[in-house]
Image (cartoon, rainbow, N blue to C red; front, top):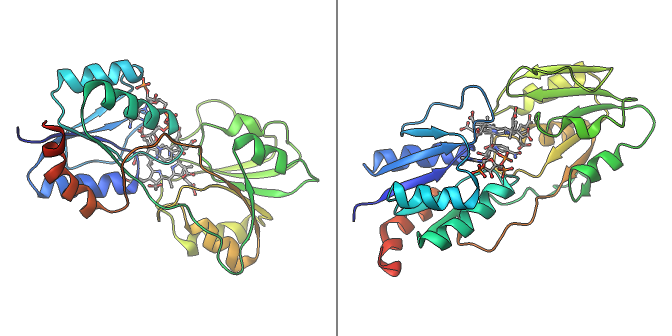
Length: 251
Ligand code: 3Y8
Ligand code: NAP
């Protein structure tokens, strides 16, 4: 049966994979959660919105006769990745994750690793500082217990609700970002601390390179644990898997 792919998207790598799939003339759909107003344009048909849990995804896979699933979501999209593992198991559809290695501290970096968002909040229990909080919109409220800081916020869309910080400046920019751009921001706003998710990849690394250049401390939020699944770290690996995956499962 000719491949009919489902790509779970929302990262730079997912967008690059869609270009490769489209160039290879393969059929597929890329899926977004609908977190932002206008997801990046894709060279493949796209769907927006949740599936309705793992059961909803399994039904989608059967109804749409999906032959392969590529989970190219962000390393912090743990719920989606967990649902993909159980839905592909239930619907007997081969699954591979296209993921990127975590960032590692380089010489000159001063990182403090915390396990999760609450860990980053605890690390900010300190006298007033000027914090670049570049973790998006979904977890800002968690930092409300520390209004003593100035926050530099970067969001994909303009905030709808008032922000929980008396002293903050909001940037609306979806990235990918540049080291020079982030360096300028940190100097302009006299940033003293950077909070970052360990996203890996290239799109969000700029702020870490800029922090190293200025010698700023970084509070690095480690990734959530993900279920065991087949993983690839390159698009070529995924394309090779698509060519052969069906055979070992008799799809
Ligand atoms: C909706 C799809 C592409 C994809 C680009 C990558 C790079 C730029 C860096 C900073 C960090 C952050 C955030 C970030 C990056 C890429 C990549 C990446 C970080 C888009 C996208 C969607 C989202 C959702 C959004 C989250 C937020 C996180 C902003 C598209 C642009 C902080 C993660 O406003 C919101 O509700 C935003 C929510 C989930 C995390 C959060 O907790 O708020 N991404 N980001 C996806 C969907 O609907 O399914 O529109 O392009 C994708 C990208 N975001 O093809 O160019 O690949 O990592 N995204 C983090 O890594 O820390 C910004 O500012 O330095
Ligand atoms: P999450 O917490 O793992 O997922 C929560 C729910 O959102 C899922 O159970 C699913 O709903 C829906 N969902 C998530 N990704 C989806 C997708 N690609 N297509 C369809 N539904 C999806 O995910 P998240 O952290 O909110 O991330 C949402 C999206 O933003 C993902 O596409 C991710 O790649 C992208 N993103 C996230 C981050 C981040 O820091 N979290 C950074 C960059 C990009 P149902 O249960 O109803 O199916």
